Amino acid sequence: MDGVDAALILTDGDSISEVGPHMTRHYGSDLRVRLRSVIGRREPHVEVSGVEQALTEAHIRAVRTLLDKARRAARTVDLIGFHGHTMLHAPEERRTWQIGDAAWLAEATGIDVVADFRSADVAAGGQGAPLAPIMHAAITAGIPGPIAVLNVGGVANLTWIGEDRRLIAFDTGPGNALIDDWLQQRAGMRFDRGGGVAARGKADQVLVERWMSHPYFAALPPKSLDRDAFHDQVLADLDRSGMGLEDGCATLTAFTAYAVAIGRRFLPAPPHRWLVAGGGRHNATLMSMLRRALEAPTYPLERIGWDGDALEAQCFALLAVRSLQGKPITFPSTTGAPQAMTGGRLFPAPKEAG
Picture 1 (cartoon, rainbow, N blue to C red):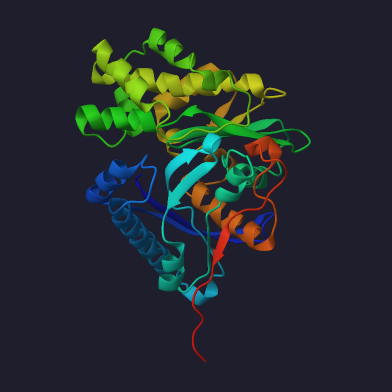
Picture 2 (cartoon, helix red, strand yellow; picture 1 turned 90 degrees about the horizontal axis):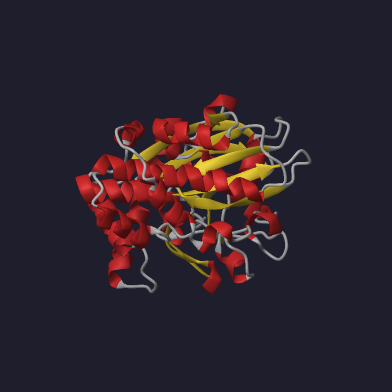
């Protein structure tokens, strides 16, 4: 909910031959508040429509800003991959809902758009997430397995890549979302910059173990989570404990790290290294906890020459091309889909008259 990440790449759908500029356009505080207020809604509503319009406008501005930065005309870009923002993710109900007006984005930018990446997988009985494994495989093509790529966004997910390039993926548990919500609720802070708040606190291991008794952590992958899956229970437990800001933040950070470590039980072989993407890699306290919990070399993605701030945007560009080519973007071992599946819908930009 911080803003729009945008990136330019040149890809054939299998590998990335050139990386262009990338940028983040942050949402204003008003849009962040409005967006948070509608997350979890289960049905369309006039309030959701207003947020969707503002969200799409932010993406239109991001595309234009990135094109200006790259000194490129829109006509030189073939395709936009547009994820939108997840309102509800309930694959057990065969429902997933991302807001964002892809048709308007195509019209306003003059560039064809591929969106709605998750629906086909969920309708077929898959989890619809995570979608990044095919990207993780592409960027680690020259690194012997087994390795793991861990993405710590609102939710944390991992991709295990075997020696034979076999993929296993699933959401491990909470990422930054609970930490962010706790800090917003208690101190009006957007996030724990550098992990400084958590570093001043002490984690309550009893609470962490209580949360880890949730059935999700014992369930076999593939599996995925909604951003707010643990929100009510966990924040209520912290409130009842009377815990202060720093100790609560440390406890939530430990929960994220411990959930990743527990996820190792589902991997066929231990990764010889972990590469971390997403905003969580900037949290030094979380990274330290991960290194201790994983007992293996754990590095930010930059260690292999990729920018972790650009990766998600680059991923959806890759997925958009694969969608257009009819190539699979999800697999039985990554989402639980019955077979390798393509996904996404094309929203063509209006053609110029004449």
